[in-house]
Image 1 (spheres, rainbow, N blue to C red):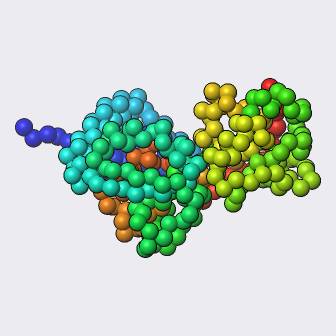
Image 2 (image 1 turned 180 degrees about the vertical axis):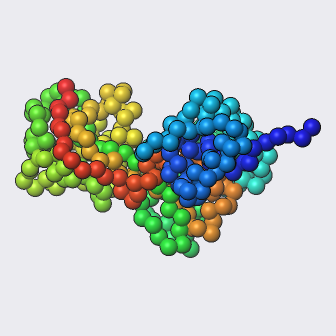
Image 3 (image 1 turned 120 degrees about the vertical axis):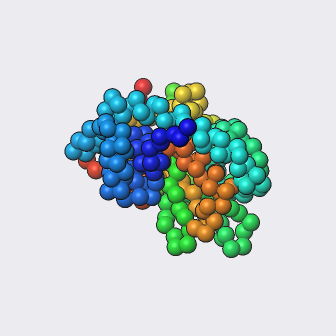
Amino acid sequence: MRRKLPPFPAVRAFEASARHLSFKKAAGELCLTQSAISHQIKALEDYLGVQLFYRETRAVVLTSEGSSYLNGITTILDNMATETARISKRETGGPLSVWAAPGFLRWLVPRLTGFHEAYPDIELHLTGSLVRTDFASDDVDINIRWGYEPIRGLLATPLIASTRYPVISPELRRKGPAIQKPDDLRHFTLLHEVGCPNLVNWIAFAGGEMENPGRGLRFDHYDHLLQAVAEGQGIGLGYDVIVSSDIESQRLVRLFDVDYPARILYSLVTPQAWAERPRIAAFRSWVLREAEILKFANDLPRLASSGDVSVHIRP
């Protein structure tokens, strides 16, 4: 019996738009214009004979029919993706070399079980390095770099954005001088990561004034900085997506509630000509799903906001 199926491009446009509740973000994910997404959604609504979204001034909202349709097709699309990965595993099998900033590896490693389950035939080789790969001479497929910088000939995909705040060890917080306002950080050793935004920026943003705020200890690797903070050697800048588990386990303590702008931390870089190679495409798609970067993608290259800052000390 012939199946009566909707046009698949329209289904993809609907699923992406419904997942993000944004035609603009769906357009970014599918490499289409926002107008094209809107036309695809309209075509699907005409095909189904129902309204899938309420179009509001600055947002879209699923109708009850749209929500029901999303629930139904999500399982189907997930099964399709899983079966596609399974049947094409011979194409995606083999070694994949990834050089990544050590701070990113701290976020990535606990999630690797999911990658191995999805792509058991990919031999993932991970190297922690802040050195920018020269793809012409280095035997590397993917480079996870600090920040975000479009470069001709390379596909640079933002991965993680995060807000930042000072972190301290529970013992130093308990035994050290009182901290009531950002200026009080002058009584502590400040820990910085070489070449990255540090406490100097945070103190200025929070309205603090310090003599020589750049003083203190400097570390080449963010992992080493966090280890020093945990051992009570000083105060460092914590990136929420990286240190949130340390705060939950009380290994670290967040000091201030500051509405500090999020920024792109890491991006995935590979030569444009290699982007559709099966192993590279598989890793890129998987890590994008893990990072959920698309909710930030329309604010590139750096997420920022303006306005007054409210500073509150945490107990």
